[in-house]
Length: 113
Length: 109
Image 1 (tube, rainbow over the protein chains, first blue to last red):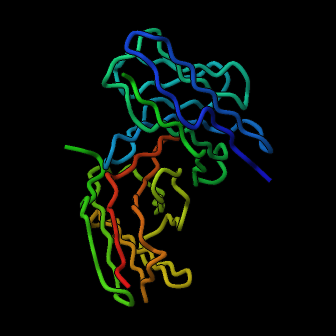
Image 2 (image 1 turned 30 degrees about the vertical axis):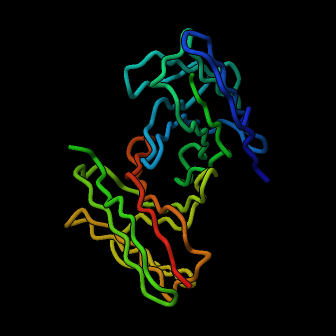
Image 3 (image 1 turned 90 degrees about the vertical axis):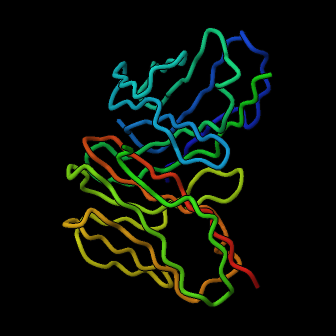
């Protein structure tokens, strides 16, 4: 069966520090991968999505970036965090071109102080 | 204008009531429609998905899609306190999954 791992679960970082969140998927090949951010009481904002290694589509201009160094690994990064980067970050995957449901990790709650 | 609009609520109903949750969308390119449930501090979990206009039933849940009106709904029958959560609609176009804002639902015993 497929599983998605996302870590860490909670993170507190000072303004101006770098960020690296990692997501890995097991049990499937060539998945679509997504990064979302959810502000408190808000919906999910799509940040990046990827349909293959090295293929990243950015949805929202910001100081975040994403990379996909391996088929089932998706990384969200920032060189210098802003207060406004605080939120709940969710990684998700879906089966490429076959089914449409996306499956989510348990999320990382990031607080920038 | 957002591509997907969802009333954020909050919505509070008594146990046993029928709940109706709704989303509208503006882009006719959306082809697949989903409903997710999210408990506090957890990732969303898929409840139902469909790709055609009409109704799809799964237990106490019914998903309804009206592509001509660009409108989708989720109905919950015999609501239970364990149904209390945030419900998010989601739609797929060109490999991109777009979510509504989410409706916070509370079922009161």
